[in-house]
Image (cartoon, rainbow, N blue to C red; front, top):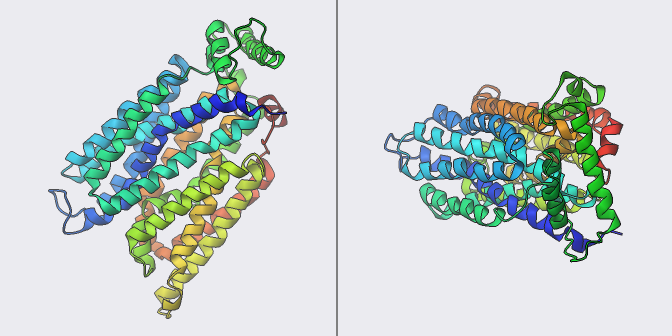
Length: 463
C-alpha cells in the first residue's frame, strides 16, 4: 500500500523546483502576446515596427540559448550537483527578463531571448533528472508532468498579462518569479542518487530521509527505507568498480544495445514533438489566428488556447499514472494529426474563396484541441520518458543529447515557420505537420516501451 504521507515532500520539491519553469513558460509565451504590438505603428521599439524576418530571429534565439544552456548545465549538474545547477539557472532567467523593458531594437530582444533560452536549457535538462532521482516509482510520473503544467501556466500568465499590460510591464511582473523560486528551492536538499554517486553517504541518507518523510528520532529505520538506501549504495559501488572515477564515462557504457535504443527512442520522440508543429505554432499563435480568418481577435484566441493548454497539462498529471506514458503519447499524437487536418482544411477552403463564415469558430476550436491533446502527452511526456529510459550513469549526457536535438530543431522550426507558411500556405504547412504525426504514430507503436509503475531497473532491462 502506498503511504501518501511519505510522498508529501516529494510533491513539495516538485512544486518548488518548477516555480522557475513558470517563469520560463511566461518567457516562451511572451512573443505570442507581444509580436502584434511590436509589429504595429505603436511599437515601443525606437527602431520602429519589427519585420517578419526580425520576428523569426527573435523567436528562434530562445533555442540558440537553449542549446548553450543545455551543454553548460548538463556538465554543471554532474560536476557540482543538481541543486546548485538549478539555483544557477536563476541568473540567466532574471537577465532575460530584465533586458526586455530596456530593449530599443530587435537585437536587444534577441539577446534577451538568448539569456532566457539558456535558463530553459537548464530547466528542461536538469529538472526531469532532479525529480526522477528523488521520486518513488508511484509518484515519478506525476512529478514528471508538473514540468509542463508549470510551463503552460507560465505561458497562460504571459497571454493574460499581455492583454492588459505593455510587454515591458509583463516582463517586470514575471521576473519576480525568479526570486520566489530562489526563496523556496534553496531549502531543499540535493538528490540522494547524486550524493551517493559522489560518495557522500551521510548526506545521501539525510536527503533520502527528507524525501521519504522519515522523522523518527529512533535509530531504527523502516525496512523499506533501508532497502532503498542499500540499493542506492549498491549502484554507487558498482559505478566505482567499473571505473575509478564514477562520474567518468567509457565507450563501454555507451556502446550497448539498450543504451543505443534509449538514445534512438529519445531522439525519435523529440523529433516527433518538434515537427508536429505544436510548439512552433504556439509561439506564433496570435499571427496564426489572424491569418486563418478566425473572427475572434488574435489576443483573445491566444488566451483561450493558453487556458486549454493548461487544462491539457493538468489532465496529463491525472492520467499519467493511470493510462500510462505510451498510451497517452499515442492518443495525443493521433489527436494532433486529426485536428491539424481539420484546421488545414478550413484554411484551404478559405483560401479557395468558399464562404466559411458560418464555421469561423473552427480555427480556434481545432487549434485549441491540438494544444489540449498535445499537452496531455506529446508536449510534456518526452522529458519524463527520456529521464526514465536513460541509465543513471548516462542520464545527464543522454538528456543533454536529446535536449540539444530539441533546441536545434526548435531553431529551425521557429525561424522558418513564417517562411513555410508563406511558401506552402498555412494549409500546406499544417497538412505537412499532420503527415509527420501519422509517421510518428508508427514509431511510437514499434519502439517506445511503457514505463508506468516500473522501476528504473525494469525499464532498462526491457530495452
